[in-house]
Amino acid sequence: MMTFLTIISEWFFAFADSTFFLMIKFFLAIYSAVLIVDVILLIHLGNVRNQLRAMHKGDSSVKTTKRQDIRIWNAIIERLNSDDEDQYKVAILEADQFVFKALEIQGYSGDNFAERLAQLPAGSFTSIGFVRDVHTLSNKIVQNTNVSVTQEQAKNALGVYEKFLKNIDYL
Image (cartoon, rainbow, N blue to C red; front, side):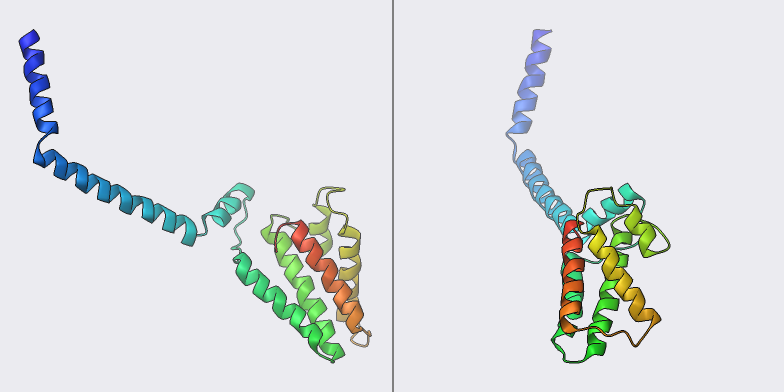
């Protein structure tokens, strides 16, 4: 029995020291490195975080990247640099739609803005009342095109929405 174990161990050590086994180890090391790089690229480029969020919350909508959202938000804010009151109104309306979409992507469902806001945990955001006020202003703009909006009102409205978007970790 000892001789059998001795033969097996000698054969194993001879194989472990062979050039063939060294080549196998070298090939497997390169293959492992390529697989690790592939996994990192898939996580980085495949938007895995958003897909996991969608699976967790049951949300089927596709979220844009944070960089894209910031670009869209900055384009909305850029409208405030105009001297045209209509641009202020458009900025408020676009911001209202942006927040509505953000609530959906964050997992809050509902047919309208009020239903989505109602799903937010009570007391978790101090700015919900202000968000409702800005949404009311947006509704007034839609219902009556003669509503007057100053640049200061538009800046305050967008400031409320921006603070809210940061609170829900969207921007």
